[in-house]
Each structure stands twice: as C-alpha cells, then as structure tokens.
Figure 1 (cartoon, rainbow, N blue to C red):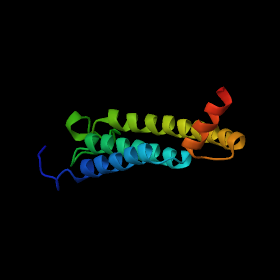
Figure 2: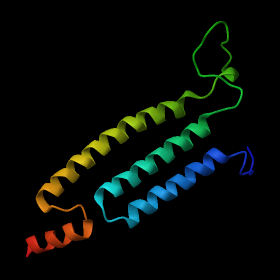
Figure 3: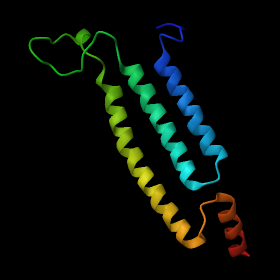
Figure 4: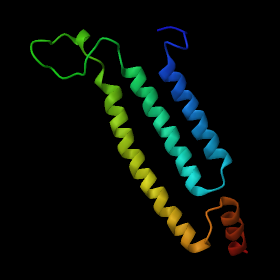
Length: 124
C-alpha cells in the first residue's frame, strides 16, 4: 500500500463518485435526481470494496487443479459484500421509485419543497 494517487486511482475515483452522489442527494429538489444520487453513492461504495478486495497477481477463489494455497487467491468476502449490497440496492431503489410514483400521483410534482408545502397545508 502506498500514498501514491496513481497507484490508488480506483479508490480515488470511488471517493469522487461518492462525493458527486452525496452532493446530488443534498442539493437536488427532484426526487428522481435524489434517487440517482443515492445510486451513485452505492456504486462508489461497491467500487471501493472491489478495489480493496483485489490483490494483484492473485486469482478468483475457485479451486482449479492442485492450487490450494491461500496466497494464490483473493479474499472472497469483499466480493460477497458487493453482491449482497447490489441486491439490497436494487430493492431499495425499487421501493423508492414506487413511493415516488405514489407521491407524484397524489401531489402532481416531484419537487420536495412543493410536496412539503402541500403537506403542511394538509396538516392545518
């Protein structure tokens, strides 16, 4: 491991993507754009985990032939976490999109400020 940016460009790209997604999530008023920002953050997290789990010169942890040495394979845990995270992310995205559709049908807008204003008027 080193502090060299060029040697760790995958992690740097993951951090930049996370920042883009997070700022998109905070600054956008449109619900669809917020969902896209959250998905960019998810993707950045998966990229970071995949980069951390990869070890140069090693192969996937599938025993083929007589190679049973642990040093020949990468760690399978980050890959499993990424796959699990993708499944959860798809489910959460589907739920958020379905709720967004219901909000649009009720309020005829996707702007968070307008929806919160309408909610306050309903409470009065």
